[in-house]
Figure: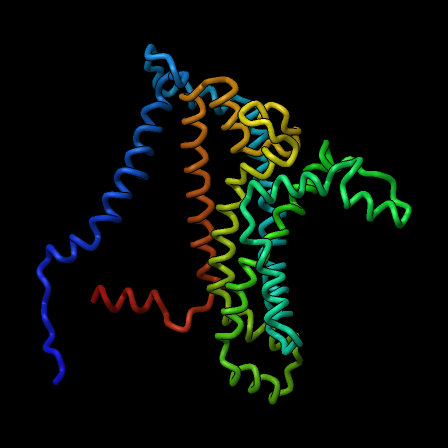
Length: 311
C-alpha cells in the first residue's frame, strides 16, 4: 500500500536549514561585517588602541601604486591562466572521451595531480624549477639548452602559470561528464547531413556543453584572481617572512594583501583591500553572467520559465 503524503510542519524545514544558516552567519556574514568595520580603522592586529579613520584607508588605496600594480598583474595572470585552464581541460576531456586502450588508467593519470595538496604541489614544483638541481633544467640540458633561472623575474611568472596548469584533471572530469551527456543522435544527424568532425564539435558539441564551459569560466576567474599560496611558496618556504621575498612578477593581489597584514601590520588597510577586491570579483562575475545570455545554450529557456512563474 502506498504511503500517504504527509505535510511536514514549517519547523521541520527550519530545522534542516538551520545548520547551513548558522554556519553562514557565524563563518561568512559575521567575519565580513567585522572585516568591513576593521577597514574603517587603523588597527594593527595586536594593539588594543586603534583609531577610527573612516574612509581614509580606501582613499589611500586608490592612490597606492603598489596595489594598482598588483591588481593589474593579477588581472593579466587570470587572463592567461583561465583560457589555458578551460581549453586544456576541454582538450584532455575530448582525448579521454575517445575509445582508447586503458582509458581508466589515463583518466587516473590526468586526474591525480588535481588531488595533490596545494602546499605539496608548490614545494614540488619549486624543486622542479630549481636552477642548479631541478629536473627541468636537467632535461633541457640534454638538448643543449643553458640553465634557466625559473624562480626569478621574469621567468617565475611563467613558472607560476605552468604550476597552475598542472592540475587540469579536476576540470577534465567535469568536461568529460558534459561531453558524455551530449546526445549522440545530434552529432550523428549532423554527420549524416555532411558536417565534418570539427564542424560537429563547433556547432553541436560546444553549444550543448556551453553551460559547463560557463561554469568553468566563472569558477576559473574567481580562483585565478585569488591565487595566493602558489606564488608565496614557489620562491619561498620560510613562513610569514616569505611574503617579503616574492618576486615582483608574482606579487599578485592576495600576496600584496598578505604583506599589508603580516609584514606591515596594517590590518585596517588590508581589510580595505579585501573589500575592494570583493567588489571587483563580484563585478566581473556579474559581467560574465550578463554575457552568458549571448553564448550559453540551455535546453530549457530559463527566462521564459521565470516570466511564466511571475504570471
